[in-house]
Length: 272
DNA sequence: AGCCAGGTCTTCG
DNA sequence: CGAAGACATGGC
Image (cartoon, rainbow, N blue to C red; front, side, top):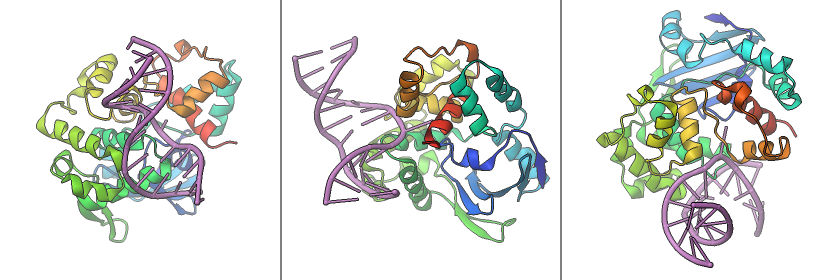
């Protein structure tokens, strides 16, 4: 099926570092695994995307996943019209980025893994985890394509430490094990986390092993859709220091700082 | 070959 | 308390 949007660019989203299971297939086509589903997407035109799924599945899953009810065009227009030259350039460059609504557990584990790894290494590590602990499935729509779902909390909680070590986690293996066990045991309830305030969510997330302030913000932003979250990693910190002399004012972007952060990150990572 | 990666935890002063 | 130091592995 086809969908139309003035702010939806597959390449930008795939290269934005917010998701790790969206990969190019050539010819402006991308594969994506999320929520136990496999889908292929093609950028037909700037404002048109083709999806391999049915309309029912789109309405059930992908419409929400890609946050299609939110008006990103307006946010980008605001940045383009504003006084901030860096953000103007970032908005022009990254136009079509969106904040995905990803599975909370997958986001949590993925961003624990992300610390001190580059993005290709994060991706291959996650794929190994999925192949070892996820479920193998086949996609009816995409010619019987085989894929692996992201592991459940229980499957990771029950993994042996020895076994986990074969997936390239490095020293993060104990973080993954402890955090998965905490989720599995119910020490933290990811499903009701959404009811808490943003501030309280950050506090709760940081009780988990391997989760500090940066990962907590990423989970809040990409897994719980707190678009006011503003994760500061080494790249964003570099921008705040070098471009804004450590005096960046978030206030004009109150309530959607995470979108601004995403445009900043994509711009700095994909230009010289 | 060797450096460095979307940080966090522990330890030290 | 804030600031260093350690940390496993793989991609480039």
